[in-house]
Length: 219
Image (cartoon, rainbow, N blue to C red):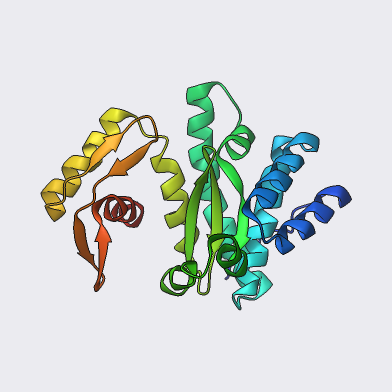
C-alpha cells in the first residue's frame, strides 16, 4: 500500500498572510526581510511548518498533485529532521533551532529569475532547484521539474556547510582520487575555491561548483 501523505501543517492566520506575501515577492532583500519578520513572531517549530507548506506549494506549481508533493516533501523533511537531531545534540539545541539558524526561505523559479536576472533563466531550465547562501542561511529555489531526489540533494548543500575542516579534507581527497579534481577551501566563507573548468554532464563547470555538486549527488 502507498504510504499516507503527510498532513497539512497548521499555520496561524498571520503566518499564512506573510506566506502569501512571500510568494509574490520579486526583490531578494524584501523576501529576506519578510522571512526574518516571521522569525520575530513565530516559534522555531512554526518556521519548519511554514517551510514545509512552501515546499509543497512549489512542488505543486511544477505540476505535482498535492499528494505527490506532500509525500516527496515529507520524506525529505524526515531526512532533515534526522540530521537536525544529531546537530541539536552536538550543539545543545533543538531540532527546530536547526531550521531558524539554517533556512532563510523557499522561492519559485519565477521569483529566482526576478531576483537574479535573465541569466538565471538558464539555471532554472537546467536544474530542478538551487541553494543560495544569504547571511549564513540557505534560501531554496524550486524550479521546473523537482522529484523525490531534489530536496535531499539541495539540503546536502546545507549540510555540507556544517562540516568541519577534517571532514572537508575527506571530500577534497575523494574528489582528487575519484575525479582528479583539486579544490581549496576557505573556512571563513565555508566555500570551496577552484577556477579550473571541469567537464560535467556535457557542460563546463568551475571546480568549486563541481565539488559542491558532486558532494550533493554523492550524498
